Length: 95
Image (tube, rainbow, N blue to C red; front, side):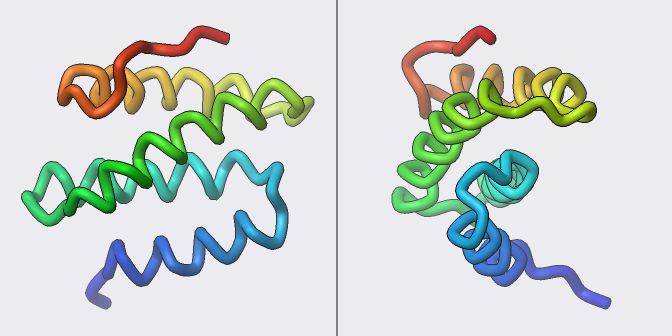
């Protein structure tokens, strides 16, 4: 099976539309875009989407009482640091 990050993200975006508090889908969509950037496959639209997803994650994670939220927060800190290092975002968020 060949994976397709763009196709996967289309499904994740639909999941986010169905459940706007689904921080896991937000995380994985952002993770996929970071992977695309690492493989030189990201576009300027992808960078905009990265910023949007990064902000959305931190907005909705604060509303979650899910037991796995802390694991996703720790993983997200790595992605946020990467976005900051790549000059895609201006500052790192703290929870």
